Length: 378
Image 1: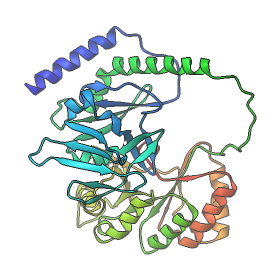
Image 2: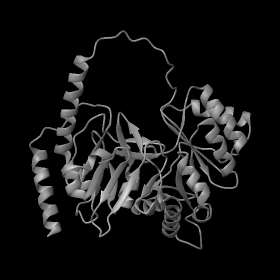
Image 3: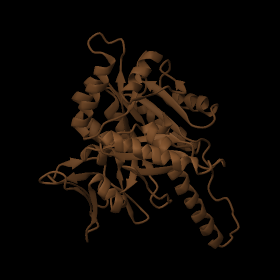
Image 4: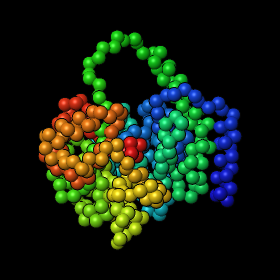
């Protein structure tokens, strides 16, 4: 019966798609949100966004049709605490997000990370935490107009690609309504003379990727002091043994990936990735889709992709060089300056805290920024 309903939904959506002209204009990418079979209205105030390596969705979406579809309700009490609650189990389950906290709590008072982010009076919550806690499936699919963030129950019956294709009409309708709303807002705005006040960043994003090891704690100290971000790729053994460091990475906005060795004779690639995520979830209540395959080939990348992982293929591999001094940092910045657009840099285990501090200072002098990787930047 579930397969028959899913097939019927797909047919209806595809018929609607045929009746609607495809949008041709090239516009800035946007993030659509879908829950169950519904594509939600698109607006700047509720659009998902990335923050410290996590994708955030509006907590206010869990009302009306979404509440009926996913079984999760939204409450904001008089202390501005946002509560997401599911009554599907006998005792019910809840996630509580307090304003200003970098973590959430569940109904058993356990700490869950990361916490919520408030923008424009709306509380946004991390998509992966909500999905994993309430037993939902969560995915992000690239579509012609941007990206589709889709939450649904595990037995929904359609793959990401089929649903995205079937929902094209709904996304275009939402996008056209969004554009009309922005045009009306623009007409109401008073004309102002534009004068440049701030220098524009020289790049679209700089992503420093490091292998976690003995220097990680010291490098986290530097990142916190300099308000910098990086991505740490950790072996399954590191993930199993360094829970405190992992929780610190999450709390300070760093991104965590799994470092796997396809040539490992003890464990297969699949076992390493699975064990790594199990250890990460035990330590942080979260999982990752990022992986770096040490010495891996295209076949290894396909095997990782079959498990849902995105493998890092860096723009610059600097493992033949060190990042341990000011001269190392300046030389690296010179190489980065030769690239246009965003740049991912793989340093492996050749960096230390001193080199990282000099590098972050060089980034600041170049009026650039160092980000943590997200799924769309791999």
